Image (cartoon, rainbow, N blue to C red; front, side):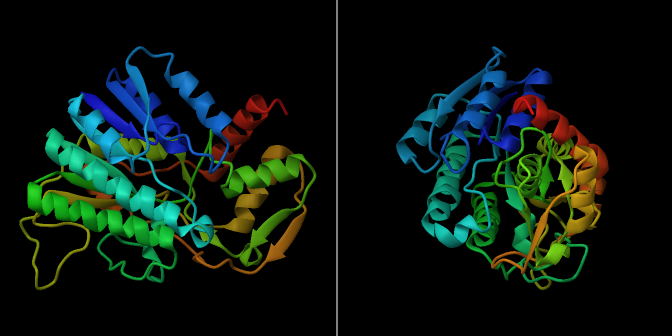
Length: 335
């Protein structure tokens, strides 16, 4: 199999490429290496991947139509995994156009490449943020998600809609994966675990939003990758029971599916911080703050469909996952 993985220098993309290479596949990685966070960290991830002869890297922006057309015309990909996106809920309040270019224009270019390139299966990263104002937990892929509360969430919902249109029109098998608060080694510096760790190590206070009452379905990176790989190997088929009178958002009469990948556990942020303090052997100084615009108070994944269709359920406890992150952080930053 020959895989195209976009966002290959990113947190999840890097781990996925590493796993696919270990499985013996040929992997082409794409990334624009933008400076949303440390480019040096992205390049260090790439260095590890480039040790494998089965890995090829292209510095391309998804939004560059000509480069994307050239990439697909010069390669015959069997599978495409889209992990590239302008990430971050809060940043979408400051720089909305970055999300339109990467997450909308870029995703359209990718869909066109898959359509004309005869790709067998497109798997793309969505997000738990699409659940927006939903409060019926755990979040189910069969629930309506028409009320996002950030442009980031809206762009991810748009990806799901666009993928469905291409699946319906052109028979392109598409699987969307809604990730729930991913963490682990080589993680993103803009995420809470990274920010908290850096601040605590440097004896600076941490900012705790919603006074520590935020609840998240924290999901370890290895579980995310396992879910992605298993989903990749299962090409979706039309749902023969789909009914337009009572449409199921999680499936379709087209070869299209949506899955949650989460730990199926709702953990309060204060408990997460306690696990971090224990791993570091150091107490955090906390600045309690109200909820930020665009944030939701809680996320909690129903993974019933994932378990039924691909036979997998994330199970890594936060204590283990945080310890693994701290071990990597200390080694990478020589703490």
